[in-house]
Amino acid sequence: MSLFNLSLTPHSELPVGQKAYILGIFSDVGISTDFKDDHPNLSKQINLAMKNGEFKAKLNQSLVLYTADCKTSQRYIIIGLGESEKYKSDFLRQAAATAAKLIVGLKVSSFAIEFMGESRLAPGDAQALAEGLVMGSYRFLNYKKSEDDYTGIDDVTVVSDTAIADALAYGMQVAAGVVLARDLGNHPSNIATPSYLADTAEAIAKIGGMKTTIYDREDFEKLGLGGIQGVAQGSDVPPKFIIMEYMGGGKDAKTLGLVGKGLTFDSGGISIKPSAGMDEMKFDMLGGAAVLGIMSVVAETKPKLNIIAVIPSTENMNGGEAYKPGDILTAYNGKTIEILNTDAEGRLILADGLSYITDKYKLDGLVDFATLTGAVVVALGHRYSGIMTNDQDFANELIAVGEKTQDRVWQMPLDDEYAEDIKSTIADVKNTGTAREAGTIAAAAFLREFVKEGTSWCHVDIAGSGWLKKGRSYLPEGPTGAGVRLIMELIRSWE
Ligand code: BES
Ligand code: ZN
Ligand code: ZN
Image (cartoon, rainbow, N blue to C red; front, top):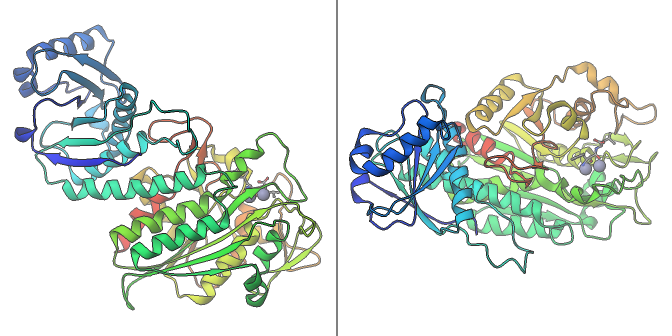
């Protein structure tokens, strides 16, 4: 539904009779002289609107105009790109999303789009443009059986004389990964179960020539995956420990490790959450969804490096065998964990994920994604993911690709001394820190105990950035797909 055909046409070859023509202009540059010559009447209207101050071509401002005497299109949508001096490619991601939303609102299914004139669109801009179109027009309608008046986008023609076909296609592929992550998040927990995530992993693996291994409840005991085993005890829905191996780079290439929290519903367990807003805890698998989104792009784009993905997946419920405060669990690396709050369950399944992946594989870098703490929402809101690391250089790489893609991460400290916060009197560690103090960092300090010494690791807390109560620009209400664009850009820089 959100994906459509995207083609590239030089300006001189654009077919007449487009249903709409989208034109992006800078506030300080306005329309080009070529455009003025070709469209005198339209130009007058645009200039009048700008003179009146009603349309200043500020970023994401829009103006819909109709003309009877233009062969290209009778409908023009002018989108503001803001000041040319401040330009960065994210402006196009935003402007494209604004355009896509308008188009969907007008029920126009095909259109042409020209941003920044005929010859200025560089590959990075084109990728952002494609991403913005897909991400901006995204809607999740799988369960809206009665809404039959939605018409999505079918065909988009990008008008540019520059060589950007590959970049447009790549942007579409990355955006498709974002869409998958969002869809997985939007599906309710009675559909998007651990088995559903495992099936998705297998379907991706088939396309990408990857190997998958799926461990079940019975395997957890044999293997010593005591974290996920403990959390899964309270649920009758079968848990899964999902492993994907993509060996696209051969023996000598770099290997990236990814771990995603795949908690398909977090009731809090015996330390139960309040009823209000508990439905939102279907989103507690967005770390796993991001990893699956990334792997789906990898399956299509086949980068020349190796990627190992691990997604521990279960519900956190209150069945008769549910784990309880005071219980002690033993994670895959043998460390014992005193449970003080069964709602701090994400770190327990990640403990197994991190110790398993670092035990079995030699990784050049490891990133985990998790909707881990409410505290990160307090600290950063919904704009940045929180990042914590044991290797500053590696964090710097992620911060840089975060800026580039605007899938942003903000660092919090993780000095060794934070280990004191999770010391237990009865076990090696406890699963909570000090009440109301640096909860996001305490969670990261806990995770660090399960990353094998010598592995460069970043923990990315997406509890805030992973889903929104209110959409903005190319990010909708609900799951955002945070992490997908970030890691795809890291992968690119590693290739
Ligand atoms: N899944 C939640 C974190 C969460 C909270 C995600 C709000 C998205 C929005 C996690 O499992 C959790 O419950 N964490 C607790 C930890 C606490 C008990 C130490 C929290 O943040 O309150
Ligand atoms: Zn929880
Ligand atoms: Zn949780």
